[in-house]
Length: 543
Image (tube, rainbow, N blue to C red; front, side):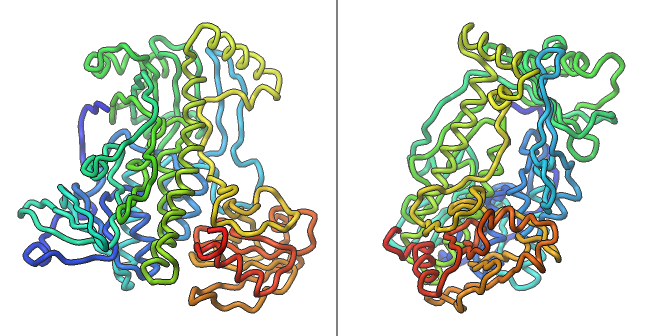
């Protein structure tokens, strides 16, 4: 990526020397390298669970520029559980509707959340600096309450060495180098991960020969807060596709697909960027260029995300195209998946092999994202005249025929992964809704008081609907929270019944700390639930 400038948006954790820099290597249970959304979400989750965690970042805060802006419903639900979600929603631009154009013609529009009864919207647009700022603010609040989280800015990891029970890190600072030890090292250090390079690990996949120009412009405009995407846009020199959507603070993100054989320096000249933006917005449009950059992208991942005591998450583990907003959103799901497993392992409540299932499940998620991302890119950029003719025929059909609209791919927008058929899944004996099957994330529902997901607080939950929950306060020392609801008293809208019972009269759901369904039954006893629970923490016969 070529950027025209780099500015600090927020100095969230300015450098300060610590006593450890003058001492022999101190050992930490968890060291997270990388202070982006994934690293901070993981640190906050672990710290709130009481697990000590140290974050090392080579900067002092997040920079401005062409970073993530689209955060999906599942990410907001995770942020809600961590305490930062409402600030993100309040600051962000909420949107559910997108429109697709082909040239001058509108092909169709879609609504990502047509049903009511969800606390969070389908998406918000929020610049990544704000997203990270709100996470760090919540970390500061958690620290004040005693959460064992430490952040060290301008601490760059320069070397790692693995031993049987820890990793030794060399760290460079403005005051010189020092060393620390980590029982577990979590690499959240981005697509160009230095830790991955230090370890000589591969990062395999497909490179897309295309360039995209980003222009973030500040203007007052009366465009609706929707995602607008053009195939073969009608405005001059816009390239093969274009995208427009709004961010907070009157900033609008514009993407132009330029093709592969370009002169990057020439395209980034202000007069040339303005020529493209002027053609899109019309003569006389008043705006300021806040940021411009050109990016290419790749769809690739590591073979596995755990390498002994080093675990990779976010862009350091997998990379996708920006179309579909799958990068940061899938990274937050990595953190959500890893935190509870690492916490249980560190407290000796689950076997170390539970961490293998982090790689199993999130590789599954990465493959799903890469597949969708690759298909979107191939639809955006047909590789032959025949492919282009086929693509344009689908767009023409979609204008008048609804059956063709699912085939239009301007970026399949991020949805949470379902862990179908994986090793932590217990029995699915409920003839209930497919959307809340075993392996799926829980779907929110409005209750007589509040929302369902607000009742799932970050540990294991046994949800019983229209039946008694088995008496089960803990299993093997792991706390299980009981939540009993009746549709008569708690479900005035009927959404809970529709989303969790279907045609059944009652249900019992075992729900993991990351709010994925571990098992479900029409009714269940304590022995049945305990067996499924042990599978869910890596102790069962299926694990």
